[in-house]
Image (cartoon, rainbow, N blue to C red; front, side, top):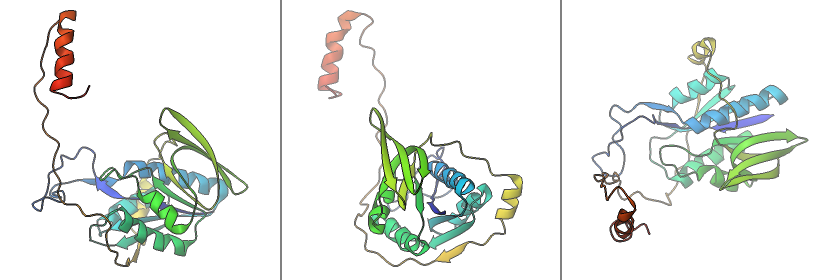
Length: 248
């Protein structure tokens, strides 16, 4: 089975984000980067399918040389090949998808895996756009996956429950937390990953569909207010929720 897993290099979830001088990007000074957490589930599921059916797992990432760090973690976890689509520019979801789809098409995989979303921009759009560009069926927020005779039976999370669908391979899937428990890279894997080759590709330029005009932090939370301690405070609470908070 030929499997491709697309991964991203994102700021650590504990990072205190600061907006850069241009007002459109984050200040990267002192920011620690990690493998996108949802992509770990995608890598793990790819490796489990390879262990069950045989084949190869290729990890792909789009970005600068810094993304090699994340690709080497994928190597340490057990992927067979790594490709960096080298591009220092800022791309919107369409531009990212275009670059990934062009390379994936050449690889002709049976399965393409993503994490359900990247925790930096949280768009959760790239996997669907890639599937459309490749002309493949897709299923998102997958929490269970079974494959038999070229057909995938997928359990995916939806609002208030789960949905079971069947998809013919080749197909694109995005992994949700709960799909599996990602393995820890072994010391041997970490050491070997340092010397494994990372193939570099140059993406074609693309005109962005979306432009970031500005970034800003959410307003600071105001001080709490105690209205009362018994039922007599309810009318005033309702009034404040309606007139000040404007939530009812």
